[in-house]
Amino acid sequence: MHIDVRAYRPRGLTPRRDAGLYAYERVLERAGLGPVAGVDEAGRGACAGPLVVAAVVLPPDRRARIEGLADSKLLTPARRERLYAEITASATAWSALIVSREEIDRIGLHRCNIAGMRRALAGLNMVPGYVLTDGFRVPGLVVPGLPVPKGDRVAACVAAASIVAKVTRDRIMVDLHERYPDYGFAVHKGYVTRAHAAALREHGPCPEHRLSFINVARAADGGAGEATVVAGTTEEKDAPVTGETDWDASEYEKTAGRADVA
Image (cartoon, rainbow, N blue to C red):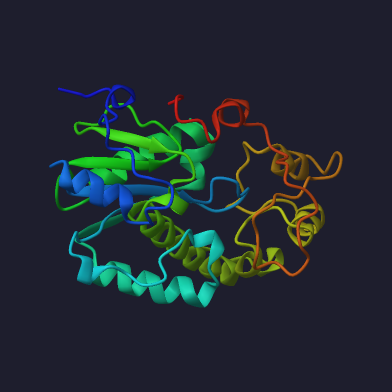
């Protein structure tokens, strides 16, 4: 029987804001709802490369807590790599699902994101007792769960999933740079920076660009207007100029960050 996760927020079990990154797991474990799995993704805003969704279950033992765990976007690449190694070595269970560019173009970004979360959870070698997701409600789960806005900054298991997803995807993008060196994937990881937009205008899209995104479609048609730069690419030296996206994903843009929309 499926449980509607919208209806399952344990009463009286919401942790205090100042209770620390492990507060959600601690409260849920004490209520008998463990083990707790966190789910997050990387690459949703990129216009090239795959979407990667990860699920992580951290051990409940206080002595096994990972020092320095945080939202992957707040960490340096070197720190993410170190934490990735520690997470994958010490986690009770973890999985990383790669959603191809072809699937994103065929099905749509938001649907791929939600389906990817279900598939990443199914890829765990255990069934969690509770699921925390980063901002998105995931219908169709067989266990209760809760969408947590900015979950990668308030729940340890979601932060761990964000790191696994980010490092997995960054490695893929570095490999893609070897195949398509004209685009600078190793630097901006497929997000629309100034350098990436210029490369798209000059060379057109490569097979790893998402044709369902407006800026890529424009480049494929020979270019019609400027591409807007997407924020969140801290590795790129020519920093983004805006925080807006330039692709046609109205369904996603209306639901991004909302916990009440699947």
